[in-house]
Length: 477
Ligand code: 4AD
Ligand code: MG
Image 1 (cartoon, rainbow, N blue to C red):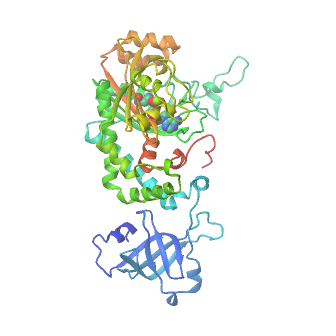
Image 2: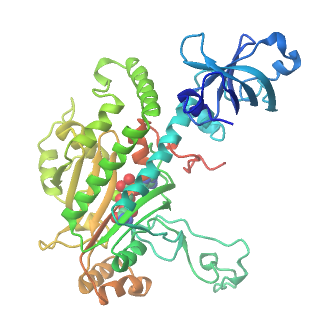
């Protein structure tokens, strides 16, 4: 048997070959034309039925959404819009689909509606294209690291430590908590019910990845991470996938070089290998754009935006320079940001990040050397005593896509920083060991995978680039 993709590209299939295919019916027109899709490609294959030769009861069961098995001859198409089609000799309905109740009708559905039908939305062209691209990007990521001498490291999901020190963790509970200790009132202490210990879902695999970098040299993680932040934005999920490379003997400029080369490489991969899906999504966006007022329309198409990233250097700007730019900017008609940056040391809001990327520089930006007090405890303190070797990468339309740093490798400085924010040394004794035994300069970063998929597909809501989004509203699947 063949996939639709193989039939349409006619790879090694001679004309008039009898072919055998299985898939789902997108439409059945005029009791004659079945548009069949099996997920192998965006396009459907047209299967032509001579209805005189088939049982009427059988034809009635060929409805949108039904799973069918077809045998027939692959022939040159008479009609427009396709080069080949299948002249059907045999059809079997493997699984019926009631046209009255099947949610995915052959028409445009809103993304909100499809989100509620996340189990069926990949039967639409848009979502199948997005998820094929998501798959291709994850392959490209593994390929890049594999070709550049990195080892793939699996960080734990259940952990006793808060890697970001931000307290945004989901606690792990055990429904059969008989191992949990009792509290003073004699009740089960549910905070300690991981066999007597308190554990959480990981917010980042970085600290564990650091331990592996300090022995294997170059490593990366690629796994699910969790944040208990109740933020309802189009860029935040409670469960998202993160890619975290970590490299021994690499400083902050080296980290920037790695991140830039990596981002360019994975985007180039899909430009080279996933043209059909990208062109489809690009056309969809251009149609949407035409409905908008001139001023809001995008200057570049999706594919132009992707090529812009692969072909241009990212702009590297220090936090201090960025603050100067923002203070002297008039971002809109009101000439003001909602949050006014009046002091060095203030954290940037997404309106500032987007202004820098989309208005001021008009290209991807790497911001570095942030004030120590707005960044995580593990970042390398600079000699000025007030900034750390942090870097965030900002992308147009997305904002922050990567966060990373050179790590604090000096035992005494790290201990002081932990003490200052109240992280007990006992909690991270193993992390401190790395600074006691063979410490060295090392750096890494975290890429939010869904934000990359958003950028690559032009989708504007993060809920539409992950199979089953986890947000305060979406957890039913
Ligand atoms: O900036 P963050 O919090 O950095 C870290 O977790 C570091 N430990 C990474 C490292 O250096 N190894 O997160 C990294 C990236 C962000 O830039 C963003 O792209 C994404 O992860 N991210 C989220 N994506 C979706 N939903 C959320 N709630 C996210 N929080 C962070
Ligand atoms: Mg960050």
